[in-house]
Length: 111
Length: 113
Image (cartoon, rainbow over all chains, first blue to last red; front, top):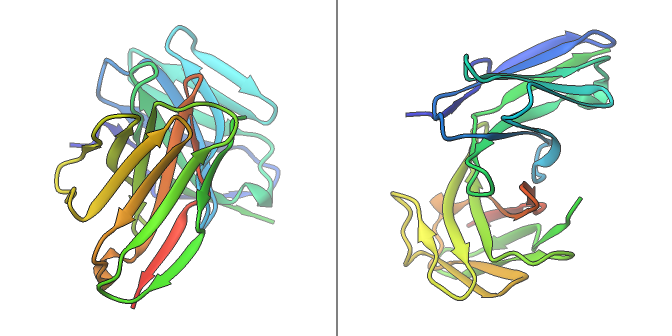
């Protein structure tokens, strides 16, 4: 039973447009959420996080939105760049404890 | 952000031998570290939680006698793959949490021939 789901295994977006990556979770104990980016043969790199007391957090081109009632969060990247092409993992945590990762979404930004 | 260093990045070993992978938190102390495994085109699979000064906690289906974990200090955890077989070939990644963010090592590509 997946507690963190990323239902789109892949996504293709044109350079300069917006990329929207979605994530759903089932465990109501999760109150801290993170997004990671991963290139092949490398460890994941932390991108942005959001606490359950907020519904939006922005850092440069990256914005994460959290809808607690729907148990849904999304990562927006705008404008998308070819260097953003990677696998993006959503992760959820009950504050400071282990992280549960989604299966990942492969983003391809086309020039 | 915090830095987690993993070594080696790549190792090839013969079937039946053991391989040790090190994970270090360089600029913070980590009482807990995590070991993951990633198969091609699949997500990160948590193998075990490494606890400083005590026994590791293994996830269901992970053989603790095969994947030995030692967390002897607040900055170092090691994963030893014992009597490695070709099916143990995979990408192994460690992580540690610093101020609510999990930081990851670079990963180790293990190939057992």
